Image (cartoon, rainbow, N blue to C red):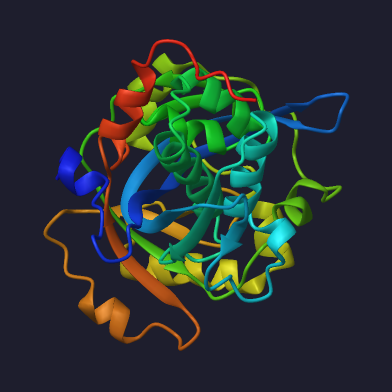
Length: 312
């Protein structure tokens, strides 16, 4: 269900926080097609937005401090992507504005679901409004790329066929789908997977037409990072086996660099039994694909702004 503009940036009269949703994504496939001289990997993927979502909460400050309320455990402020997003805008435009940042975290960390990147993107979107910057969507996407390769996608706001290092995006129309996701309780640093010497890096490129014509058969699409992750983290292999047992025709796959695995299921499928027998450290989610970012009304408004505010 699309969120209305009034719901999208609801303002709490007592706290004056604005709330920006930050949805997760799935990689419906992920192929590694090469590696640049600077070490970045060249990828092809389809990013599917889903309705599992964090919520970024922002409140303006009269000073120029960036204050992280309820910081994430074991994450230093200088490593927190929402703080880095705010500082990037503040430094870029020499702002004297400050902000309190809170985060209602629902997307597991290190799960391959893009939670941190989505949080950063929603922070940029919210501060663009809160600080009256009037930056265009393209300007925000360029800034977002400095924070991470997946951040521009969440600012783009639509499901996409993705190439390059994750920065070349082409809108793709996906059918409405329901997915079952397992997060097997282990956080996987992306660099651990991409730095593995036995990672396959020479998959032949495909086209968006190839995906449209053949994805339904699942014959040509998988995740090139999955073989590495299952060798390094037994939890990923166990979660895939769980899905294969309970959804034998569903072609389960890891998303991103892991650790979450998923499969598409029929809309009316009950997952209660599966949820009841998950190991204690695992989390299961039944989610629906989104046709666009749940804050797309805000993305769209940003995109139609003319020019940029000159600050400093």
